[in-house]
Image (tube, rainbow, N blue to C red; front, side, top):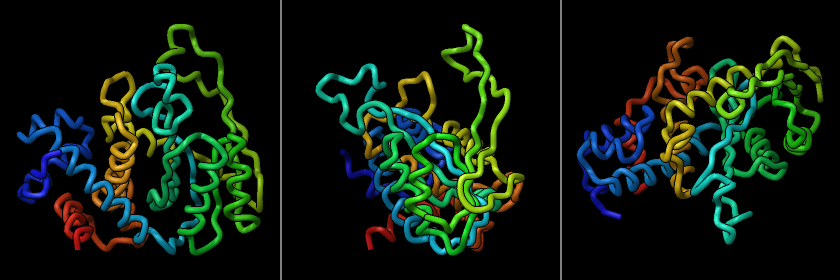
Length: 282
């Protein structure tokens, strides 16, 4: 790849990042800013790594009260049915899931993890969530069985945990491919501790998942903008959450999630975000 990303003027770097976090593809960003595709990819990769490292350290000792957890599907290299036989079963080729945890009050995404949709990934993810908390919390997940062991292993009895199980009707034939079936009800099942039934919900984290699909072109369905390499996918997710947590003003809160959670005193600009590159090099 070109080393041009290392000599770009700060304002041009900021313009590239601003385009990416608003859902533009790599190629569209390159055309808009007037740089090469490789330059955009190099900057996105380097900055994504810096964003992941910063949030790993900064999002600690959080006094959250209610956390919602969910996972969102995407794929890398090719859809599972199109993965070459020699790559079948190799992670990073086919289905990839991003687990996310949202603080229901501040809307902060305090943790995310990219992996398979299985107990191993869920357990590692919940252990990371637990390591970021300073107090007992209420957690809500969907009804997937992997969370039962994951939450138990990560938090033991020190949690108020419930699952929300949605009940779906049968989708019309024409809607099956592109639309989920209609949700006709849900069950709230306490699992551990004493969860408040009024706050057993995954609405906020599901809305955050929509923000991911809208804000990262590689998550958009029915396009060829999907991630071709797992490292690029991970960098894009880290960049997205850095912008979401620290830069983007939440429409309801009127401040950033990081400010609401007490992690930041003021909103970051895109230029501040790009400045993480110099911290990484020092």
